[in-house]
Length: 207
Image (cartoon, rainbow, N blue to C red; front, side, top):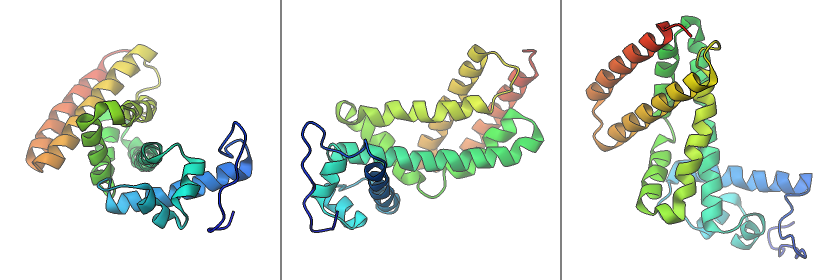
């Protein structure tokens, strides 16, 4: 499809996600919009702004996405996936320490780096207009939990892994809000010291 060409009409199925070529094109557009979002943030996001970033038109974006909220949500999810991938890579490098606390600590610099401010905006947006952007918050837990479950000791039962992963997720979210709102590094370090002790006690408890 050329830049000036109108999207083709499809009876009962507007998007080409059912074809490999169509899905590849959708992902290509999404990657470009995600890159732009990571630089400029969520404020004043629009289809026209996204279209400029993707080098296409807003009509083409509407062919592949359900509207501005859908595109924004998909871009935020993609941005969050990138951060999770980097966090897990950092945790894997720390695996030699063989401690859960060490792996969680290793993730923190990634969580506050690069596009963190944009994802923090997404938290605020979901809280400001939960009816409109609830999916941004719901999908966050779905994205982070599998990774946090994976760094728990293998011999733990599923319930114990879930409980500890939820604790880690809640604490890290609190630290991120504290970091963004007050920048109190000393306070966060104090909180991490307590989290380290809690995880060390938990890991030393027999499975």
